[in-house]
Image: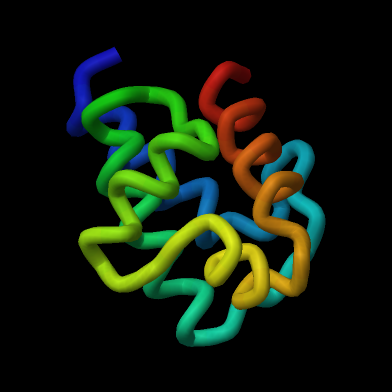
Length: 88
């Protein structure tokens, strides 16, 4: 799947609340900013793991532990849901 096509798909996943598997989760402005960085990463790699979060977000002033706090301890679940949505 071309990166541009994937980028559109990810954008739609983020805004389409009626899509399959959507859990009706509301994100804060800070969470949305981090999710945008994850989306940008995914347009290049098609997958994200904990090591990616540590390397990418350290440059942006975050770490897995810090981001996990921002996401209320749900970062691993969110990353898993994102990877599943991409694979679907």
